[in-house]
Image (cartoon, rainbow, N blue to C red; front, side, top):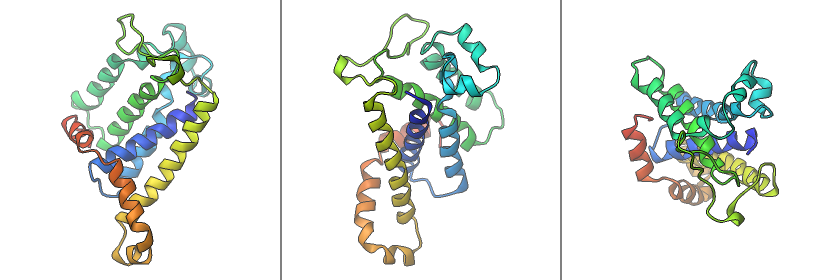
Length: 204
């Protein structure tokens, strides 16, 4: 996936997490989504032709030592990142730490649909990829374009729906005809199990 697809998927995932936690609308919630959006392309630092390698000074050095979609796309790297941000006693704002972790994890989550897959259990030599070829979506393919457009629309529409549901009563009355659709959309992606997982991991 290209960097914009990774970024918008991270924003969508963050919105779903916040909704599943019934998070209030605060600047911290917005900042969490923004951080996830910004961090999501970073794991592709292992690819010299990636957007992040070309725009982050010195980043291309990583690709000289790390094969693409291996270490930076693994559970090991995600776990180490989580421990650094949440387990070592650093006083990192929760919105910042959560945004970084969600952005990083979202990267390899969506890369699982790539034909190449990812070496998720690195250093074990097993690659996780779509079980059948027709489910795979190639980089910069028509399928990726569709996914990116759909995700972008979801991020914008979901944000508006969530804002409406938390708006003052006067605003809700003025937009009463939109409330049922907003409730259905937010309710469809408010998953109690996801909220429970995030609370267990102290992500929210």
